[in-house]
Image 1: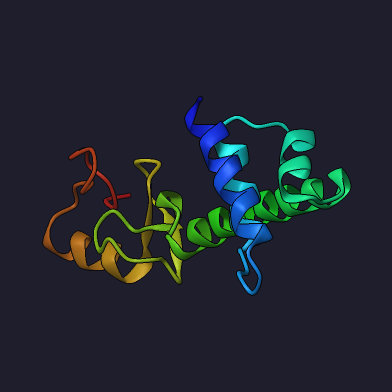
Image 2: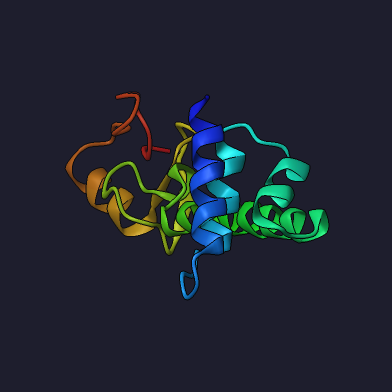
Amino acid sequence: MTAVDHECNVLRKRKREEGDVIDVNEAVLRMHTRGMDQAAIADVLDMETEAVAIVLMRSADAEAMCKIASQLLEDPEDLICPVTRLLMSDPVVAEDGYTYERVALQAVLQQATRSPMTNTSIGSH
């Protein structure tokens, strides 16, 4: 007997016991992760195959939304000033081709007329 078969038998037994409630969504996802197809999951949990598909679809949608949210919470590297390492609010493109926060670039150029990224001469024109 495989681990999946054992789990199916345990769930069937739990379903038969009066008053025992299982988290169907969790069970569907766990079985799917272990390689069971939708029809087999539906059979074990005594559900319609369409209901299993909906649980799996909602789970995939939730995972996708979490991934998008985490990406949005992280500042894209293209929007980070290489001098301040902060999100730029007033970006400018310098002669070296890099984008900087305006105030940060002005502060750098007051010290030297060299690019903080390439060390080439900038700001002297």
